[in-house]
Length: 88
Image (cartoon, rainbow, N blue to C red):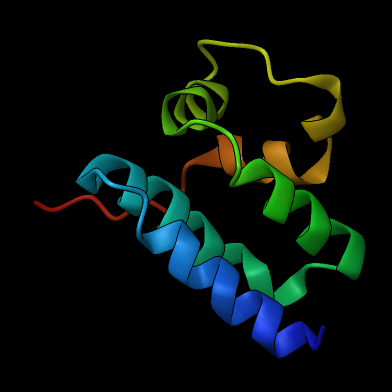
């Protein structure tokens, strides 16, 4: 499948999680980081988005340890949380 199509599908899935909090966290992460992902990272994010939102959010804020397969650049970037807009 074409990279651009994969990324468009992933962006939709990242921004349509079911709760506003998950949409902001996961969608914001996608928008901030996806341009630089390798094919292997895109595949990993496709797998990651199959996980439950509460798990992904717990990994991002550090209240739970992610499965070994996700440890690396994707989860490290997810944990920075500097991509989540804060309304003042």
